[in-house]
Image (tube, rainbow, N blue to C red; front, top):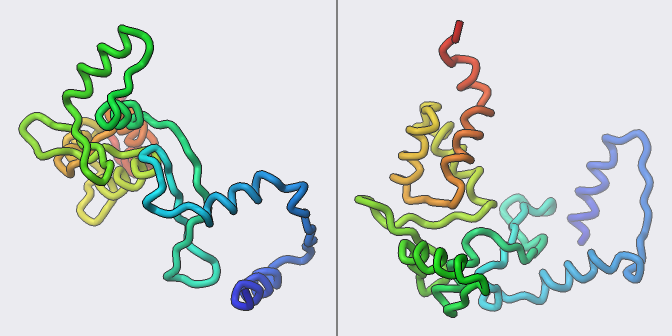
Length: 188
């Protein structure tokens, strides 16, 4: 706790004016519940749909701690629930579509979802938190050459990654890339 206090005091020197307000636990029930959930959850107890976000600690540079746990529903959960427990939606059309699409997926013992690709190895199904990092690494990374959207889709699949809205997300990512837009062909 002393190291945290020292870091805060160093950071406060950069501000001209600051105010410290203490909020009692009774008035801040959401933060208290979130802190209790994060500290009481073991890694084995997490559901496949639980997303645990790790943030770097301000106290130590090499230390990572669980800052928040949020149970969010992403595109992978319906396939995981079906492959693990056989749960189907109530709507017959949705359940038939899920059974058809689920034939392309397989589930690991660890709860990791993989998608079978044509003429390639199994692709790890990524959640919303991993997509941006993978796209930046492949598009702008050490060996990245700011390729076009179609080429980037193939590179992501060759890297062994997959997510539901992959082509749409990659097109949007390439369109937002500043370097790609600066050096693109001039259309007259």
